Length: 351
Ligand code: ACO
Image 1 (cartoon, helix red, strand yellow):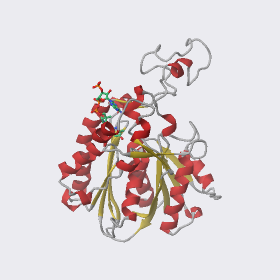
Image 2: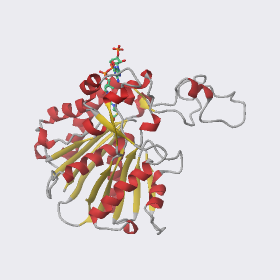
Image 3: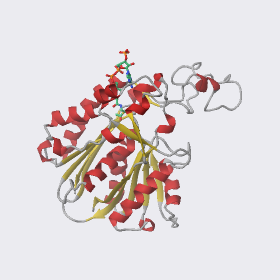
Image 4: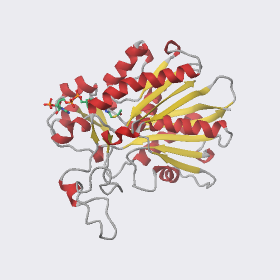
């Protein structure tokens, strides 16, 4: 048994936020953002109405329809996000509830692998399907970044990059020779965990980064807290990113992990029909395209419209490519991601 992508879909919120609109809150410019990232606009979810799980449900319903199955037919849900509705429980069970699934003979798993969440999720689903444990798995990547960004000048390097959205894939068992997921490669290096991270709120209690920095109470006091007044006052509740380190590492790891997958199955970059890189930054994708010597029509980029939607970016781009008729039966589709952790990975799928 192999794993095929039987249905792919996406949902992005209606509200378009242009670079120009961001200049009202922070010292930035349309030119700076386009030159460094390629981003022209992004989508922001409707506050108090949309959540990562509700956006995921919208994408999932379309993916289920495209796969020709009902939500009740699902055996397992995998939800990838770094911006969950709740600290716990995870979004998987919220999505199960939102889809109205009444059967309890199923599992729901949340994975926290940020930009490479969809690739990790695909690899997990592939193992379950190959072993015969499950037949129909829903994999969702969904992010609501707009609620958690710093709209002051201090946050500008991070804030201009991210947007909201969701993508969903229905993964099914197939015995058609050569079809489906050919291989997946997963990697991680925790050395730089804090270089692209949102460390508060968390249970670290100051442990990793120096006891006094966060304003935690005297350690002899019983109990604790995730959020201290100091964190609120000093703007410590936002993501941080060492942009140049991320950029430099990403442009090495993307081609490396794509070539690793290709050589595992005896193929080369010339065999790729469509590359869907995680939409981190248009400059990173263009660099990878040059290294692999791929023509423009073989690389799907939509960061210009949506910004970086982290775990949602690959399924959104794949869904758009599918809708545009760019993915045909027999095509070799390559997915690749690099991001926070650092974690990175790739997948080769014969459509
Ligand atoms: N508008 C205007 N100026 C800005 C902005 C902004 N939004 N952000 C930063 N600047 C300024 C800085 O303050 C700095 O000014 P200075 O020279 O006076 O100190 C100057 O621009 C250059 O800043 P750098 O951080 O050195 O800019 P860089 O060229 O590295 O670009 C960027 C920043 C776009 C974040 C880049 O490093 C990058 O793309 N890194 C990769 C990170 C990435 O893709 N992250 C996506 C999330 S992670 C993932 O999905 C893989």
